Amino acid sequence: MKYLMLIAVDPASRPADRAAGEKLMAEYGAFTDGITGSGELVAADRLAGADTATCVRVRDGKTVFTDGPFAETTEQLGGFYVIDVPNLDRALELAAQIPNARDGVVEVRPIAAS
Image 1 (tube, rainbow, N blue to C red):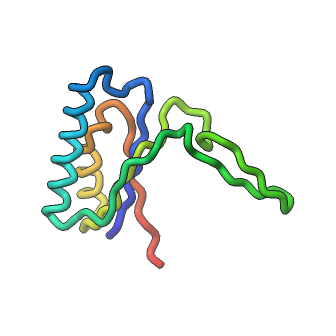
Image 2 (image 1 turned 60 degrees about the vertical axis):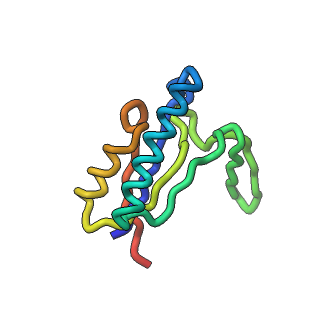
């Protein structure tokens, strides 16, 4: 079954220095290599900052564009993984291994069958 793991972090919790940033990226690399090697990775990517987002809403036939993230929260969407695993337990096990699960939140959601 396929699951989407959405990674949300508080921008204030980003690494304070280059060495800490490199360590975090190395942890992500090791996690990604692990699920690539196991054949569980379908797709993954890091997102540009929320300040680059544009939200689109259509109300009463009028399209409105708004700069910035769609919700006012301290945590912002930073990246995602799509995995293909046997069950929710495995998806949750992997989500707990994502480095930013320690200081952010990882939302795990099944991908609806088409």
